[in-house]
Length: 43
Image (cartoon, rainbow, N blue to C red; front, side, top):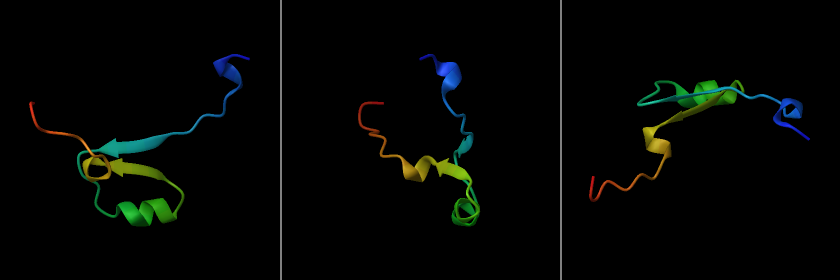
């Protein structure tokens, strides 16, 4: 089975998203940097 048979989903990833929860309630896939646990030590 190849990747062509997989369903496609699209979303938004940004530094900051105002109204993110409202978009999620409408069914949108939305993330901003606050949703990720990114270690900053050593960067």
